[in-house]
Length: 66
Image (cartoon, rainbow, N blue to C red; front, side, top):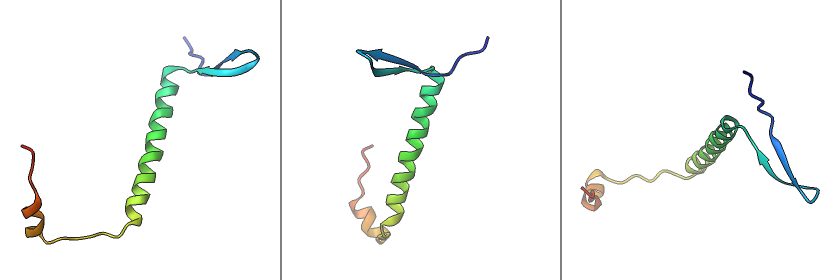
């Protein structure tokens, strides 16, 4: 059986108001959106200069919630 992956447009009062998608298409769209957001976050992180601290300074402030 072949699944029709083309979206269905819901029309109300002559205007498109919603889209019905195959769940696999929807999930792929969400994954791609997440990848784009991750790339934007990575680009922002790379644009900042790195700040380093001494290990002793870090350990003095570090308190794990264990």
